[in-house]
Image (cartoon, rainbow, N blue to C red; front, side, top):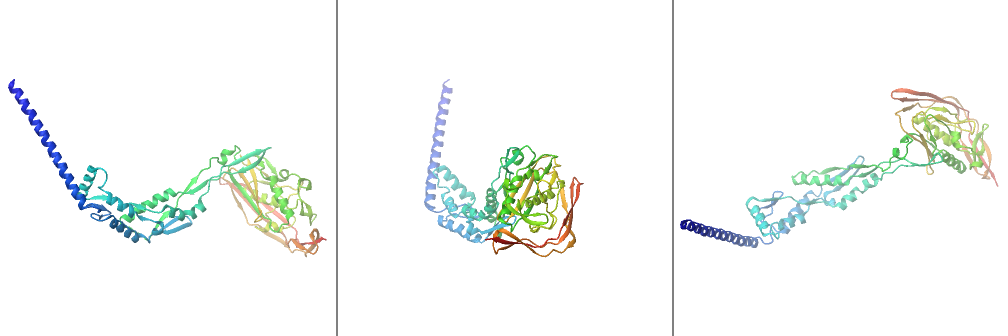
Length: 472
């Protein structure tokens, strides 16, 4: 029993001795390490610790200013690299220097000099020991000027960026009084450009320094919150036909009548299988319904009459019907070739109306409603008529009009005009030969011919007509 107690006492004394020995050794090691590190710090005051490397450049024992100058010099070497931002037909070029593209020499210098000088002693010792024994590779810091990038991309942003447009579709008394198809928006993907630009730093880091770097400018498509097909349940989703005509050199009363007539058919809805009458949609054409006196063809003469210019609208509507591939069931040509309708196209593409007898009609042979929209550009003096619906894939082929049976124009004539000041002469019609004009239209769908029609216009010869002012 005494022997056992003796052995325990000896073991405890040995354990205590070992503990204090280890503690003393560790304390001695810590004191020695601290003393050594303090001396090491004094030796390397205000310089980068040995073994710290950036891009294979040993920065050990260099001052912060020297590190700064090393990477400032590298920036001078890449200053002339050209960056071209390219988007289809648009491009903008800027140098690396003007873009502020290159090494962030300030940050690199501060990082290099700060390594091993944090508030944590153990961390500092570990980093310094690692750098001194095996070397410590740091990633270089880069930068570019976001302001310079934005300025460079401004021309793209101005040309490309546009907000999406929500569809607008509202009815009143069975007629569409407000309509605007939805439009997708788009914007430059600046974040993708930044990512691409950042990836170029790696090429420079590995010594690949091309004289020109192409940065593609990508576009993000922005979807409207309310698309056209969600704004209504009539199947009106897209443009299926468009017609245009010019009315340049028209007198003011004629322009007024064109504008009024266009507004009367604007918003008209044509149901599936419905036959549309232009005259019915237009309504009465007279001074009682707001029309002014302008020149019309009546009994083979150009005379002042209510609603002169309305045929500009019917002609434009006829062209929209032709281009949409819809079946035209009734159409009449003018008595002679009218100069207005040949300002932007060949003869034979006109349609006259005279309420209530001479009409322009078509049948909606689609399975969805068709919406009529009109637009007048007063600056260019152009009338446009749009037909919206749902495309069923039909395609239209129209031949070039053939002119035959040509007859010379008669002599010029002058007509008195009480609305013009005395002595003023204005030409309202121009010489036009008499002729027969014909063209054909073929409409196909799913590879099958669904419409083949021929349009023939017999125009009488017409002389130049001058208005002679008689107003005192």
